[in-house]
Amino acid sequence: MIVKTDQAEIQNYLKDASNTKGFCDAVYFPENANDIINILKQANENKIAVTVCGNRTGLTGASVPKGGIVLSTEKLNKIIEINEKEKYAIVEPGVLLADFLKELKSYSLYYPPDPTELNCFIGGTVATNASGAKTFKYGSTRDFILGLEIILPTGELINIIRGKNLADGNILHVSTESNKSYKLKIPDINIALSKNAAGYFCKENMDVIDLFIGSEGTLGIFKRIKLKLLQAPVKVLSSVIFFNSEENGLNFIIDAREKSYSTRQSKKIIAIDVLALEYFDKNSLELLREDYPNIPVNTESAVWFEQELNDESGDQLTELWLELIGKHDGNINDSWIAMNDKDKSEFEKFRHAISAKVNEFISSHNYRKLGTDFAVPDNQLKDFYSQIKNAVSKTGLSFVIYGHFGNSHIHLNMLPKNDNELEVAKKLYNDICYFAIKIGGTFSAEHGVGKNKTELLYRMYGEQVVKEMFEIKKTFDPNLVLCYGNIFNPSLG
Ligand SMILES: Cc1cc2nc3c(=O)[nH]c(=O)nc-3n(C[C@H](O)[C@H](O)[C@H](O)COP(=O)(O)OP(=O)(O)OC[C@H]3O[C@@H](n4cnc5c(N)ncnc54)[C@H](O)[C@@H]3O)c2cc1C
Image (cartoon, rainbow, N blue to C red; front, top):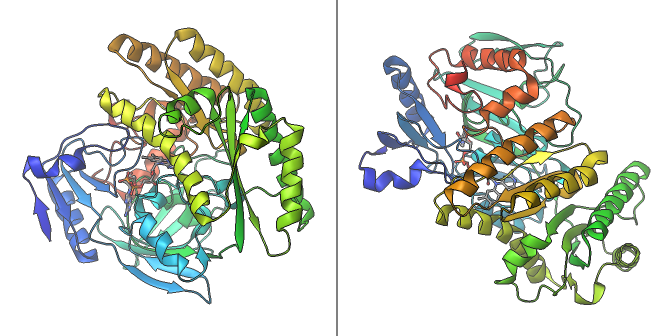
């Protein structure tokens, strides 16, 4: 196994895409399960902190070490099986999502829950329960995990198959391969949102596999992952529609969303049934204009949507969409409609470009990202949007707002240019996260808690629930060696 200790060589392992920075003594590159077990056993004996990392595209500092060693999963990068007939795949955690999606194309198979960033490892997406544009229709990574082989922080192994081990009310029993048994009490949480990545997944009668998905490296290291796959759609209608007001863009989203919910209920074949529904405000479009001069002038908002088509439905569905765009005064003549797969992937790049531009801006000013990741109840989306927009506009800060609005999931990114602005932005950031929580939302719909949002977890659930979550962590990791600092802030107890 390769171990790197030269600080010049390990610089890339000391930060993530949020520009959170850390430090460590060495980076280990295990090549098999035994290497991982040995690292964890040594770490427990010598009380050394271990931070597991994927490809460090996370946005919360979760893969950033604060001392000890880093365990990189990059050598564990084999696609073990793709089963076309039964529609599943088995992969090691370090498989790059972009490579996996490319490989699936030759099978006509489909793995929908990709986050906007494809340069991440599948292990990282499971650990953060990543979600993306297609989550509106298909859910998050969690909905596609059929099995997990996990190495616990103590070096023991567990093998979980979805559906085989459910909690009895709030009590979960977990057995290791060597028959050691753990009993866990699941905190009582009641969150009615389509997306929430704040803390451990907790629900009465839950499947044990869901506790580990989204656990941000704190409960164990995934060594093998079994993923559910779908048949690839025949064709996808993809379009970026520009609007001359924000109100029209938001109303278009709300209308398309309601129509999609109703289609899902009625199971109509030819009706609006959105795959992705993403919003861009005027500032986002201005930031993108440098690279996309074809964004029409006088545009106040834009929506990128996708819908799957079959051989028969194409023309009729296009008509339905044109009608909806007309109803909300979409600028159809200057909008972009994908005519082929190349155009479609250009629109995906357009959506990725806004997140990447924000991250570039933050890094170039050497600040840590101040991007919100909140989701609010669907009926609050418009009011909430206008209130946060007013609040940030009053400060005079530069900002952009975009995100997965189909899921009422908003990324407001403040772009401070100096230390004074940074202080103003930090205060506003917390205030609006508190506001989202107060109206029944979450401060983290998809990026997780990491090291940067631990205080907000207390705000959302209260001390007792966080304490109960921490008990679960301590049950599996009595010496607190693995990814300690993620989800739970050591200084908050
Ligand atoms: C431009 C951009 C856009 C993005 N858009 C989205 C988006 O739309 N939706 C979204 O959900 N995310 C988004 N992200 C965030 C990011 O891509 C995800 O968080 C990703 O899932 C993390 O994968 P990674 O391999 O980079 O993991 P890392 O960042 O390296 O690690 C993330 C967490 O996973 C843990 N981990 C990694 N591997 C393992 C393993 N094998 N076992 C146990 N724990 C492990 C780490 O300890 C850490 O806690 C975006 C990021 C960027 C840069």
